Length: 329
Image (cartoon, rainbow, N blue to C red; front, side):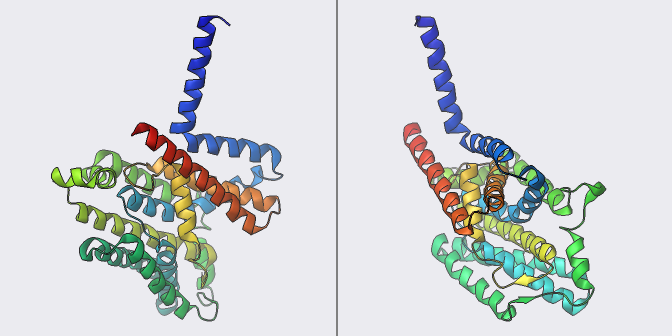
């Protein structure tokens, strides 16, 4: 082999290695999409369902991503969203107004975000311990109002709630529901905040090097508080989406949602230690998670194996992130 050919081969190998390290989430997404489309029966017919479900659960990942980038964690997002869904149903039943229920659900998300942010940033309790504790608080709230298994709007209100967001299709296009449009707009807004505004810069600095941030004048505690409030708002929106899609609030509505969101964020490229990640990363991670679940369901694989594969993929990505972080250091 000539020297020129060997150099060309080395360059190709370096390019492939760089692609796998820096863009592993995109590589995983493309591989899964191609493999599932060709080898999983009826997968291509489920693109609409994947996009719709990704939009409903995506807000949990979006909110968590903001907290994770700032160097924190929130393990209560599942039952924050479930609490918002419960409030939506309660207010709809009390007032007969779908709009009032949605506003109340969003307000609930703001409240839970403020509570979590205050406990972590003002009182100074560890984010892990604080959000685990608050998860049980929100879970108890949800279980109290859904002690019979579920609550749902009475009469025709249930149909109206179902068709209000997840069931409303724009231009009669299957996947273009209001939930898809809303999360697309929200991701663009958050992408702008992270890339173009001082708040976004502060969020990255807080996660990457908080000590340097303090020395440069960044208020780390205030940044953490704001990230938790934004996460709460996202959970409130997710709760409204869930209430609309199911036209009910079920007692298990918040179970395991935080694992889905963490997996989507990390698989998408959000670093657990903070300081790295984009909204595009989150979108890719959410789609990967939904593709895995949909593909395995179509193959009639038990749900436990879906969790196994998702967890294994999460570990692989974490190992890649750890190895590349050590090399860069």
